[in-house]
Image (tube, rainbow, N blue to C red; front, side, top):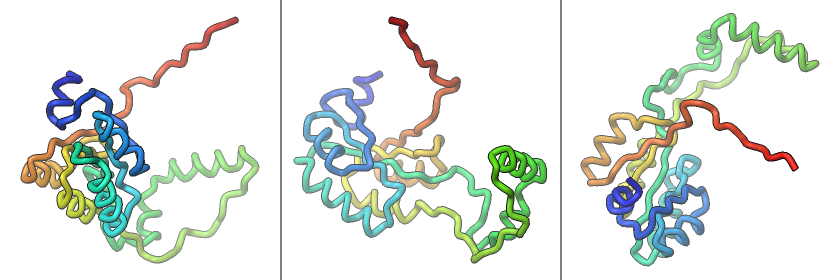
Length: 176
C-alpha cells in the first residue's frame, strides 16, 4: 500500500508529512518524501503566496495540500447568530449550563446576538490549489465533498480523506 501511494503522488519514499509550515513541506518533498501543506487557515491570497513559495523551494519535487471543506453545511451563509442559537436543542443548552455551574461559572441569561455569520467556503482555496502543481489534495474533515472530488478529477489530482480512529488509541505505560 505504501508503495502504491508513493507511486500515485510521485514521492520517492513512503513518508507523508502534513504540516502548516511551508518550510517543512518543502524540506520533506526535497528529501524524497511527500510534504502536504495544511491550507485551511489561509485566505486565498495568502495561500497563493505559500504555494508559490513551495513551488520555488521543492526543486520540482511533488507536494500536496490539505484543505478543510465540510461535506455538508448545516448553516447557510448569512444565517444570523440568533437563528443558529435557535437550532441548538434545549437538552444541549441544559447540559452546557449544568457543566458551567459545576465549574463555578454562572451561565449568561442573555440570548446570543450579533452580526450574521457566513458558512465556511473552501472553494476559493480550491481555485488557488489547482493553479499549482499539487499531486494530492486532502480534506481535513473526512470524506471530501463532491465539488472537491469533481475538481480534483478534472485536474488529475488524487483525493485523500483524513479520518480519526474508529476507536480511541490506547496508551501503554511501562512500570519501572
